[in-house]
Image 1 (spheres, helix red, strand yellow):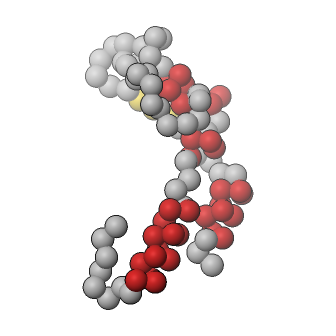
Image 2: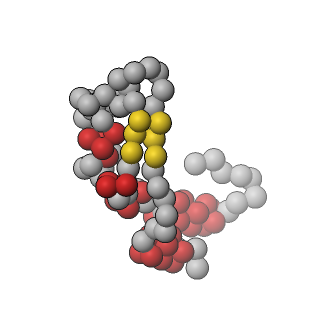
Amino acid sequence: MIRSPEMSGSSCNRLSTQLTVLQISLLEYLDLSQLNCLNESSAHTFKSIVSLKSRNTSGSFLLSDADEQLLLNIPVGVLDMDLWYRSMAHWE
C-alpha cells in the first residue's frame, strides 16, 4: 500500500483493514446456467474454469476453436443482497 504524507498511521491501518475486508470474489455469485462463450473449444470451456467458483489455480484455460476471438456473455443482473450488505457494512 502506498502511504500519502498526510495520512497518519491509524488512518492508514483503518484503510488497509477496510480494503482487506472488501476483497469479495464475484465468482460465488455467478449463475453458471446463464454464462455463455462463443467460439470456445469443447475441450477448454469457460464454464469448466468458473464452475468451481474459486480462483483457477489448475492448468485449465479457455481456448477458441475458430479464431483468436472469444465472446463472453456474463449477465450481472441484481447481485445477492448479502454481497451488497457485506460491502456497505464496512463503510459505515
